[in-house]
Length: 98
Image (cartoon, rainbow, N blue to C red; front, side):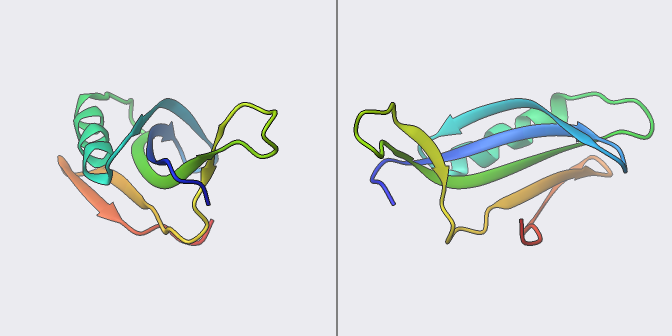
């Protein structure tokens, strides 16, 4: 993979049938990405039947072939982490295979 490791954090909202991404940000460290997800999960309000959740994934910026702009690529060897707000607490877990 490339050399500039970036952690992509995102928030989503959804129900049992579908979900939507509502925000995304990138960070230089995993701990910064996780802290952002936790702050945002506590701040989001949903209506009954909807769940708010977050995710953090490791990736790098690649520019292949050289004439295209660099783009973020998920690290295939990194598992990532998912977060849910359960009873007022953020609970982190490893996701099922994507």
